[in-house]
Length: 274
Length: 161
Image 1 (spheres, each protein chain N blue to C red):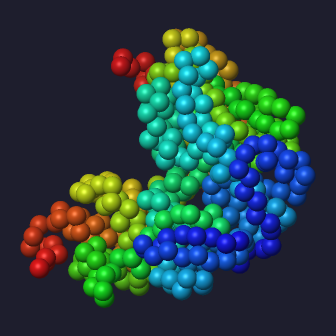
Image 2 (tube, each protein chain N blue to C red):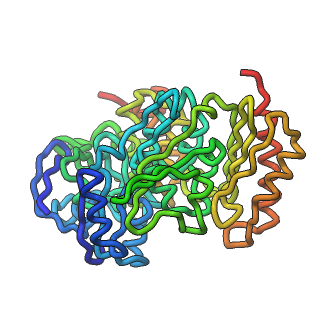
Image 3 (tube, one colour):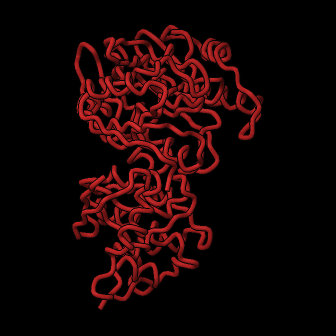
């Protein structure tokens, strides 16, 4: 048995907004559960209310619109992202990134919204979505607001989301559709380890952007670089945004070295003719 | 909270504690103790069951989240006291030593075979990457899944009646 909490499962976003207002500060969100069930199991957290958002239709599904781009509902699980036709057609980098998460059991359950809201510095979806210049839609009784993902993360396990708010969907802009891309994730054992370093790069006719995970307090992204930027310029831009630390999983120097290695490996991929 | 679910084709209705995970619900409330608890934190895969056609760690799901779902557990493998072909292949190929990982391992293999009749070695490895086995070194397990899908040479493979 886990510690006591009240389980709530709202069926619409308005019902959820009211609950978030009422139980502000006492509730935690349950999406895929692959992080919070571990926290509950280990008694690291003791929320009074656990609000399951998987029954809310408005937060489900993936759709593509020529104007807005790709819209990914917050409770979309990794395996659905990996298999989605529009994701594979327009933003295959996202399918690639989702495929690198955990094990099949976790990919079948873990949600994109949960991955971002947990806001681990090594969030697997973070660096790929940053490279694609994604935004997130946050909702509450006060209305909805859309902010760039690069402003969303504010620290390890910290985001812009306030206690009465919820992440509703992720938007990937059309301008990044069909981008050439590459990703590398350094880990010890496939299926059982979190990233020591991850690098995702995307290039369109207008821009090169690099997202980096596990190399700072949050996933980070470079400034927009011109599409013909030299490898040296790209490496320099990456080194400007990363700030890795020594920890139990890897040293600062190793992380910096591997980040540079990955950028050098992926860079030529961005210029391949399709 | 009252929940209804189907496990191995049998329908159940139970009053489930909101704070109980699916693993403990299966073991304690339904008496299906074939599914094992290893780490309790989604690392080892010993508690793997198939939920609506997809493998999941039952330790990371609340019982109440499984309301309305269709589950398959290791108890659904053998029929009338006879092991399934997949179980026989594990037996024949020495894919079981201590046996603790086996129920979860078999469910991961089962989910793979339900989607892919003749999986490649790479596909088998990916399907079981979330299941720890500390005894066999995995090779025998991979061979067992190849055998169960008719991909081992007849002489080495499972003898079919």
